[in-house]
Image (cartoon, each protein chain N blue to C red):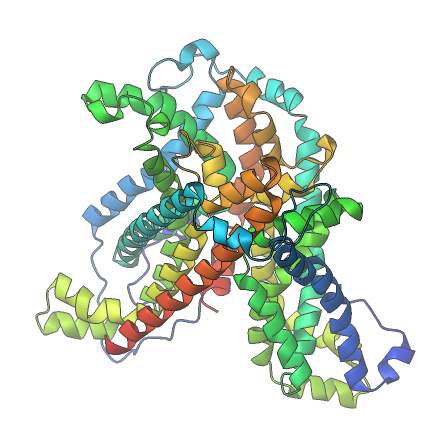
Length: 301
Length: 298
């Protein structure tokens, strides 16, 4: 976690760049005293998050013989070999590559296509057809996956989409419902004057979108990108039912498949869990503010 | 991305046509991979299709049978019990932590960062880690502390297994809800709270009559989203109990998955999925109405 931003913020400053209205500066401000008891209490609460993570790390580094007891003690002699064992057993490079490929593909394609569809809808909401389209896409938000699960399995295997490419494709199509909702709301707030200026210079709709609108969508692209990333990277059910070949398995799916073999060897299992969780954790560690504000923008829309 | 310069020909076309080309491919694919499966699902729910081979049209018989099926009834009872408890716990804990984070504390950004971690982790894997904690570590700790009820694995106890799922689900969902509540709390002008303090309002009174009403819309979002998500619980259960012991923690999603894919009840479980969809929509709409009315009157 970054330490840089830990300077005590004055109580009047918004700690989150979410457009909190500036507070009235009329009253003279005094520096409020830090509530240390509350800080300590919250730090104690944060252990509920940290302890399971700590547990995962130490268990991944133990010998099977050390597992007796509660298991919160440090490993006596860190077994780095557990990681290579898990790496080999679950074919980690393949699963990580699949997860990365699917996630990156889904994020990029989603950003490029969903924003475009939303633009066309947002700028034509006065026409019945486009307005209808908006409600058509957004209403899909309410349909739980189990309804379409069984037909989709048949469809994807029939069309040869029971692989990584098929998953990317499904994430992009299913993402439409929520992303259209997010993008349309955002595009409405972009003044049309900008586009009209470009149009008078002779630019067509296509150029206007890619040259003028798409760059302006950056904050919403960040939100959609982060939400799609978290969804595609962590998803379990869709890969479970869609993917048919073992070589196409994603990281969460691999943990599921190897669960039975793991029960005899928990240290390898935890090494495997840790390696599966690590990429998302690392991304989050380096882009923490960005991820939180992105998720937030998506939720309070 | 922005270099996709269009061929000149296209830009000359009337504005409207380009807009159509922007939506038509997406519409076709969406209809093909979402709308069509929904309709197919509905059609199959009116047949006796087991997932392979031939099938016959049997009208609404699957739907009628659903209401007589104890497995289905139990799954709904479990799912609602779990979802309601988890929703309340998640929101109470998240609101409390968000208020703490919004107060005058040190290390706010770091703490906020830590609390958000569960939101970026795969639930399935988190479930496996907790599965081990519940079955191996917790009993040892409980025994040392002399807590009889927890000295055996709670996940194999039909009466307690659901609590394990509540704990994991809450652990994960709190992360997201904290961020929403925090955003809500930061919309409250400091002056309002200050004025109340000067007027001599106590902490609790301040919370009830100022803070809570002002963040009511955020409370509504969180309650509706949490309940909707918890009603669809799946990954947690697969990782923790796989629906057991017996069928004690079989949620509706798990039942649809296992019955429909492995149990040869394709048509029957699709009917179940459609009823489930109607239930979720009804609950969400009801909840939204209720909470919004409360927002108004507060």
